[in-house]
Image 1 (cartoon, one colour):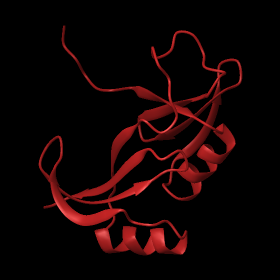
Image 2 (cartoon, rainbow, N blue to C red):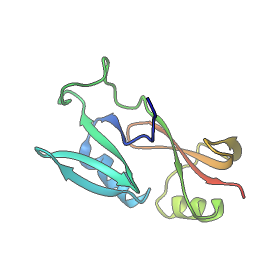
Image 3 (cartoon, rainbow, N blue to C red):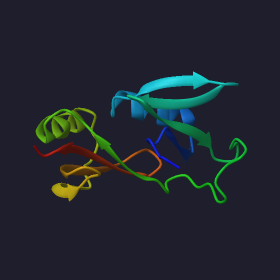
Length: 127
C-alpha cells in the first residue's frame, strides 16, 4: 500500500450550522453541501465532514462525541496576523504562540477552541 494523503476527517458536532459558520468566518474554510444534504467544510484539498450529535451518518465512529477532536491547521499568514484575526472575531487564545513540531518541520502555533470545544491549533511553518 502506498498512502498518498488524508482526504477528509469527520467531526461530530452539536450544531452543524454553528460549526459551519465558525469554520467559514473565523478559520477561512469553504462551506460545502454534498451527497444527500450532508455538510462539510473544506480547505485546499482536504475537508471536514460534519455529523450532528444523534443524527450521525452510517458508518460512523464507535462513540461519536462533540468536542473530542484535536486538529492542526496550517496558514500562510504570520502568527501575528492570525492573532489579530482571532481578536477581531473575539476568539480566545488558550495557549501560544508556542513552537511545536509539524508533519514536515517546526511550526509556530496558537491554540483555540471551536464551538464544541474541539482543540484547534492554528500554525505557520517556521522558515
